Image: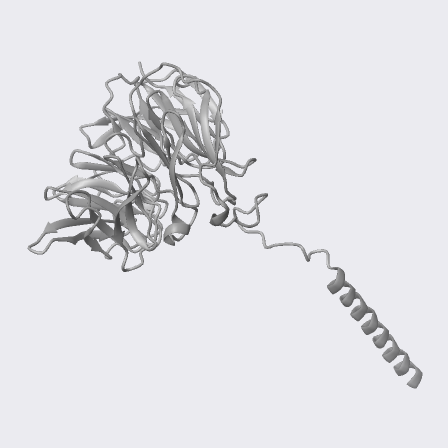
Length: 477
């Protein structure tokens, strides 16, 4: 009996020694010691992001082709000439398509992203990310042929995060301004590509990099570039000729940069820049001796994620929307003896009324159009129309059989072009500003994914993209 006990104890000791030796060997030679946690958006991309201090904005320039002589209409910035995503171009639009869809004029490959195009003086301007060169690149193409004319670019490391570049350039006869994913602002000559000035909002103003990178589209207003920062300053105005800062808006409550873009409108005869930051909504003077000064602000609308920009239905009101559970709201701007004040008229969740997760709604007369977000209950991802006096009950919807995800949409006269996440293009005819008839649909890219970038339209040509390609399609008669 004693021998059996002794043998058992020896066996246990031997097992312990073997296990301990194996464990020590594993600690010293473990094959997983170089592994990192797998995070969404990190696959096969740089593991770290380069410091902004190492970036030389606009450092490189290349010319590929001479511009052709084609002159056309203009879609010079986010949401077009009049900031409303509506083209009043007189070119007739076809109300039906052949079985093979509207003809593709040209197609080009892009880096992964959702940055839409701007069109001006026969050129298409796109802010792209070149993964091979690890560079933000302002790429300029011929509107008529799709040939690349020139590009100005600079090295910056960006990891994949639901795409890379998102912002649309703004273009005039003299300037083109881009807003890079890591808050790099670049102003170039829109014809020659010559670099005029640049700004690093993180390095110069302590801006916080937004989630999923920047999506703000810059604004040029009478040769002044208006840029929201949400760092040491809420916004700045920059002289496009010189790069000189001509005004700065204080940011006492430390609001952060959102994905929303600055727009201009008029309240009580006062021209105003309106910005939806992370923290609240603000109106900034756009004229006079107080230009750049805060006119009014409100924290009664302060969702944690904001992508859509504000819209203006008239009556000194603004409508703001987002997804992610926040929904929408309406404010009226009052003029008082001491200044201006923003009064909340209504606020609702996505299930209770008009909302938009990514695209900015379109106002047509007394009606407003949106694609409701995925958390809108029964109306999720439907195209819907509301009267501006009642944002809680739609007057028309596309129905549960027609859902469109996060896709972009615009109006050319009374024709709406709308694209879903999978790059299927839909043709609607708007009736009396408040209802729509589906006329046609066509899959643009067979394997199209994440087709979220805003579209541009001029002269019967529609330019759109999915996450990797951009095409020009002829949709005129």
